[in-house]
Length: 193
Image 1 (cartoon, rainbow, N blue to C red):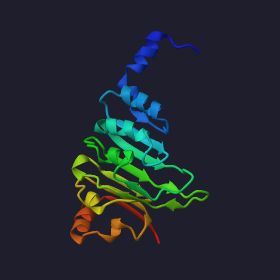
Image 2 (tube, rainbow, N blue to C red):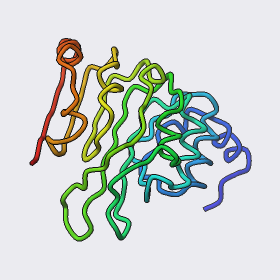
Image 3 (cartoon, one colour):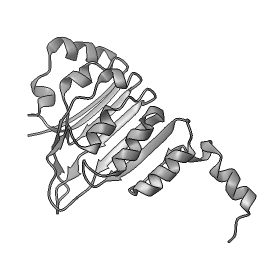
Image 4 (spheres, one colour):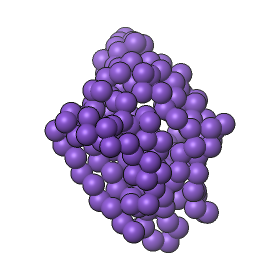
């Protein structure tokens, strides 16, 4: 099937046709699509990454200013990933200013050869001021610094799946928890020992 050059150019130059990104795991493909969106808000509903230093995070970081949904899945990579340190590309992407970001979902890695989530500790702090519109946060198998979480004034929906003995719950300040619970309309906690 051949497409006329006029139609092809029209499709490539229409940003609204490129704002829904699903099941991408290739850096070149993601960059191609994100570049086409120009400045329109983008929903990345499933981004498969191979680790915290995956080069695909460079494309994400470059476009965080107009991403409204970001759902990241860390895949199986031969050996289990247990930490995301501050010098990785993932850290750079997650700490970049994202004024339009409304939904953030980070899914930890499945254990090699099983369906069990491997808890990933993130050793960096996401400045809450960088995500002023964040209303939905899902952390599945991910442990984040509590300071970020409790400062999210716009958060309305929260889902956590993982271990109960994480830094996330261990260092929670009662006044922050109370304020957060007053703002949430949806909360889902699945805690494992």
